[in-house]
Image 1 (cartoon, rainbow, N blue to C red):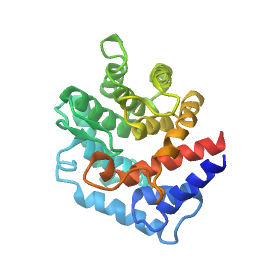
Image 2 (cartoon, helix red, strand yellow):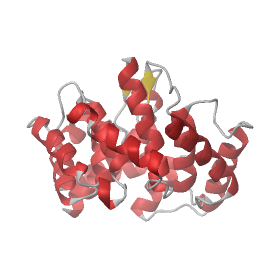
Image 3 (cartoon, rainbow, N blue to C red):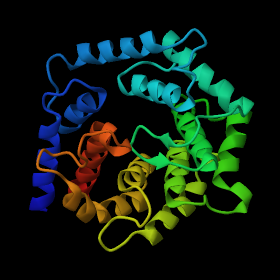
Image 4 (cartoon, rainbow, N blue to C red):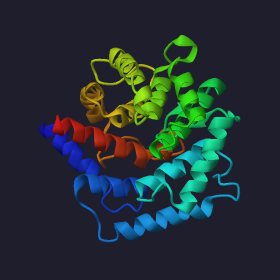
Length: 269
């Protein structure tokens, strides 16, 4: 337990002076909000609004647009607020219209990479669904149809563990009629977990993030079992990935936030 507490403290310190959405959320989690965090949240939300094109998208990208909507909700924007609604409406049109998604290779905001075109398409739709479900658009017939298609593609589990994580993230907050899919997805991830706490041929932080979003007891248990891998991976500065021009490096702060949340679960459970 001492090692987990120390790792949690290092992760908190990593965010102490950073000016970003993950830093705001990390300081909230640790109960160490900075005096200007509310103003910073407004500035960051305004930056997302400024980046929105006339059609309601961020650079015509499903992932970028959906993620901007998620970020704005994290920063306190109401999902009925005008500029946020424009982002969500664009995402909704892409999902319901089954339009082409971001091409491969696709790097997600959490640092996971999908190199195959079919897998990138699924992962991108999952990010879109995650935003729509959180904004209470999950019961729309077109959205519900896509959720069912992703959860039971060809009557089987997604083809990779990383895609299982993406689908789990999309369904984590889904309406009750879709939540029965969570048990099978979590069970698959749990079975594949190694004694060291990580997964072969899968992105540790991507799967942990999906389990954190699910939040139910079986998912939390798998998160706790991932702690040895997180402790082994943590860097002296409290992060879990070296910064740099890689998918994980560019997502360093997002992945540090995932690690911080996982360590908090371990301390609570």
